[in-house]
Image (cartoon, rainbow, N blue to C red; front, side, top):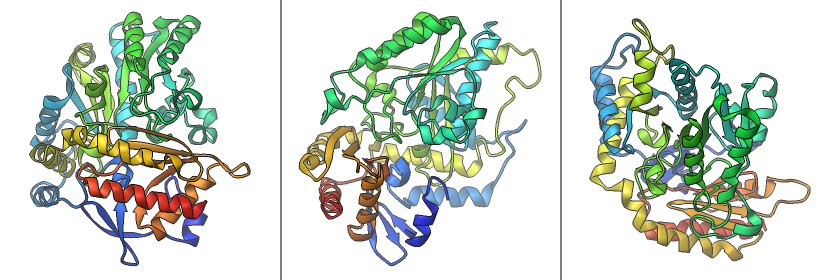
Amino acid sequence: MPFTANKAFKARPRMLVGAKEMHYQSADGRQILDGTAGLWCVNAGHARAPIVEAIARQAAQLDFAPGFQMGHPGSFALAERLVRILPPGLTQVFFSNSGSEAVDTALKIALAYHQARGETQRTRFVGRLRGYHGVGFGGISVGGIAPNRTAFAAQLLPQVDHLPHTHDLARNAFSRGMPAQGAELADALEGIIATRGGETIAAVIVEPVAGSTGVLIPPVGYLERLRAICDQHGILLIFDEVITGFGRLGTLFAAQYFNVTPDLMAMAKGITNAAVPMGATAVRGAIHDTVVHATKSGVEFFHGYTYSGHPLAAAAGLATLQLYEDEALLTRVAALAPVWEEAVHTLRDAPHVIDVRNLGLVAGIELAPRPDAPGSRAYDVFVEAFFNQDLLVRSTMDILALSPPLIISPAQIEEVVSRLRRALERVA
């Protein structure tokens, strides 16, 4: 099972057999309040009829169309629809099947772009410690979560450096919104440039808000500083918006929340409300044109997947974007965020809580680790919440991550927090 303690799971299985809107149904018939939108992905809530119906219609009409040297209208329609809501300048879209593939696609496009421009020495990438960019060899190379890399370290991409992460518990504990301290951490990029040479670096990749590592919010001014340094040295900036995309922060994308536009953007999860797997990589038009026009004839970019732009995924994506628009879900969080912030920060005095941090409809609750078993306390809270509080949360290390569907009500926000408090108290 993926990212699972398999022996522990099989000793006490947690089985989900149904879902509707804000709840899962467990195998023993309980309604589980979804505090994580599945895995950060079911933004519009579960089993929404417009998406289900669109998938069924598409399956009956065109179940699959090859994407190599062929096309179908749905993928082009979805690309056009995405471009209308993406930050200005991101005008081209390459479809894949997951966030991992969207990231690897972005890395390949960055290399292809510099090669097409004649800067073949730009082969180095810069990621960030505690960053998560999926599980392809490219993604774990630029990523910075140690357990994801350790077993594969001998075969990772060789020319990768990492910025320091932005988590500063001593200065920024219990921050509400963006931490005030830490913008200077972006200057570590200047140090890498001084050592490696800016002319050797193809791209910098970061999550605007680091999610899987436990919700690390960027300090005020940090992303702006990264953008400025990249521009100064001709380095592409890639945002991994697999988690932050599609309304999670109260804007369509985090790039718009922070007013920092990347050169490439990886997306997935909320693009189809997780109903059908899909990833996408958005690219500045000038990057696309440079790559395409560098080849006189034939295939311009040797990359792709059997299921790129799959008809069912495209139908789910179009229906999802329409549902987001009809219910104003991509901006709904802006109004909910203050309610969410007040609620999650009431956990400040819960047992073993050493930090609460939040932005948009995301929160990280950090717990003091047990001296002899780091990570076990948060995992025990996760299990307690599921079995005894009918609440789904996510644990990573000793951090509990919350990211509910965007349809959550203020009353349900209070319920999430109260159930989590009971789980913390029982484990304590």
